[in-house]
Length: 273
Image (cartoon, rainbow, N blue to C red; front, side, top):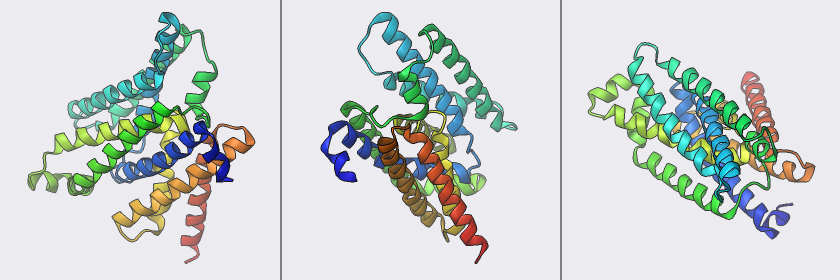
């Protein structure tokens, strides 16, 4: 079954990108869930969509040869910085930053998509993911992003862990909370924009939360939860990509359904113990 994916370059790009996405999305998703910021993935995903729509608009109106994937990454990083700024402004109501940025992202997406003459196959692929959407340059960029995310998490693991569970104690201990918060949200933005090629804008948050929700039901430590969630994420991504290719459907839907089924199994097993 996997032999077919190794024969053609575009399928190899998709397979290897999927494996990277299955690693970085649950890796950061574990910290997101513990921090109770699960909706941040949706907010940044919609900002990324507005960037992609802007890229398609510029590409169509000015006939520029570049991938809207890159403008999506830029918009996602800008959205992440704005979210962190709004969280510092509304200190007593920090959660309001996410619906603000989500609403703006949706509004900009509607405007840019309309100006670009409406929905087309390119937008559809970004919304729900595509088996054939990952180019070689996309794969190399996502590889660089993945390496950067993994190294950052490994290097700043103690700081991220401390801020996730006890922010006040972390600040007293001398951890530069604002800097680590900014780093984390930028890493999240990069992971979301990288995952969109495979999972799609509308479903990317599920890959960052469902494997984590399943893993914390059976894990006995935080590190174990990270490890198990990555395994669940990889299983879901591989299932989605392979079924998407053979059934000619967007892989995003089957990735999410696979993650949901894993969650149901863990809930059932835990209940019967």
